[in-house]
Each structure stands twice: as C-alpha cells, then as structure tokens.
Image (cartoon, rainbow, N blue to C red; front, side):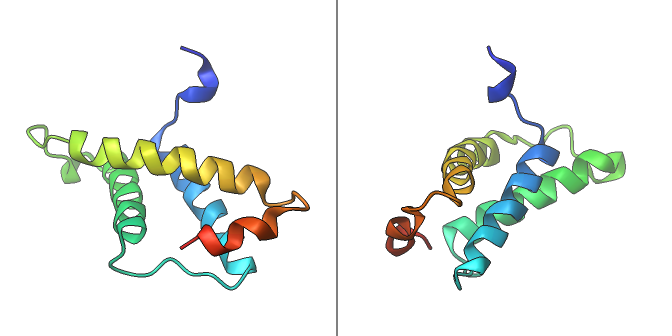
Length: 96
C-alpha cells in the first residue's frame, strides 16, 4: 500500500481542521448532531484517546468509527485539495 493512503488519527484530525477552516472561509459550518459533526468528534476523541492510555479500552471495537472516518477522510481530502481551484465555488451548494 502506498504511504499516501495511510493516515494516523492525528493526520486525519489536522485534515478535519483544514476542512472546517475551508468551510468557514465560505460561511459554512459543520452542524452539531449531523453525521459529519458526529464523525468529526469521533476523530478528535480517538486521537485524544490514543495519547492517553488510561482512556483506552482494549475491548472496544473501533471498526464502527474507522469505516465512517475513512469515508469522510476521502471526502475532506478532495474538498481541501480543491479549495484554491477557480471553480471551487461550484462545489459550495453540495457542502454541508
């Protein structure tokens, strides 16, 4: 597998913050309680738990989070990479 497809929760959290900043620049916010908001909170939560062993539960099945995070990671990567494209404005009606 190529390295560009491997992400840590820290990398995904940085991407999440870049994505959120990209949206805010265009007057769009991620709504609390939305699927995107829920997944964003999961990214932050899992990153923080990774830094604090006392918060980790070795019996917890993280697959339910990872599937959602990977799907949103791909979406966020595309949006952030296109933010300076002259036609980015055409994406705005399709963003949260």
